[in-house]
Figure 1 (tube, rainbow, N blue to C red):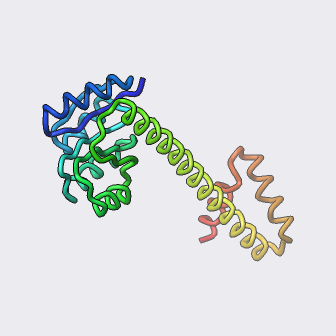
Figure 2: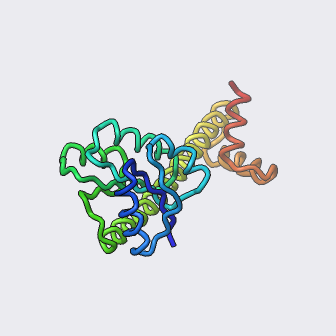
Figure 3: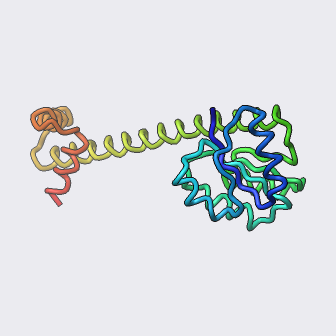
Length: 188
């Protein structure tokens, strides 16, 4: 069961939203009335989703919600009563995973939350893959630079320089990128 942290300044609407979310099969673990309360509550409760009911949201409200939820590591969903295309574009551009104009039906909420969570998890996997690719590319760059240094300093061929790096990596039990970095640092 997904745990939802609800952000809503209006207690009457919050209780309706809580009931609709619980009818949809979610657990509402807390309701906060101010976006800036999110920092502490997210750290304390570790929700799966942050859902903000932003009545007549202004740009500042969206920015506060996004700033508060940015480091949370959960998708941020927004419900609003205002059909404002500019605000929608801005919210989505700021990382809001789902934005809905006044929808409280359990079926709508369930599908919106589940899609947002699935997309967020997929994006998280892509971010991790990108980070790994960047790390791998940086390692390859270090190895290429270290091979060039060995070739220049010792008159080695590219294959011989690579073999030296590989042999040192195996001997020391250290990745080739780390051996290369150490060699480059020692030659500077």
